Image (cartoon, rainbow, N blue to C red; front, side, top):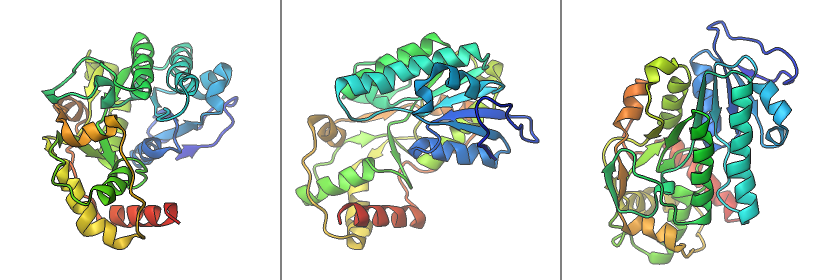
Length: 298
């Protein structure tokens, strides 16, 4: 169950005795993490962006929690906006978790902090951000690592709620008319698998998690990003209104041309979860994308 109790009050604890705070619990990845935690029987307290502006409220929201999963980030905005959302908020969360005596702090980041690549099978490549967004995410990682957090770095995250990966590629496909030039081998993960793994880590003792602080989190093995383009062409585009072609930024274009795949074995081993295929959307995923793109292009 999700707690909606005022953060100044005591939190109801689930029958399993597990209470976990999730920041950004109404967002894309955060909402799936909340669902996975609730399915496991945990009590979940969600904290929104506005509450994170107040350190005292943030600390109260974490009081009594065995773990905090931090899912708030910004993927666009001015340099000031990016620093506020990706660095300053990370610092607030780190300090609040320490003040509340939280045992485990898990933060969702992104593989983009490692730069454009190529990356071919590394487990923990160093950060080398190639954009302002990635630079702010990398700086936020450092703040969180200083507080003992475990950093989760997925690459391409797809599934219901995705407003970036597949929609951006769909608009690009319309402009290019083909996916033949999409030669990159990449890592990707279904958002439900990712959330399931994160929820299991949040419920695992710190001793069992070991000392590794950065974990890539994608489905095993690389695949050709052109496979996404083929699915877009065959399954998605026939279901939606004509899309406006978009021109990708250099960073986005590199996703189609430069290999970016990572070794995520340790994440799944620690989580005790068997992930699905790198890209295999269900009928429900197709329906979500079709509905989203039809509405967003009106």
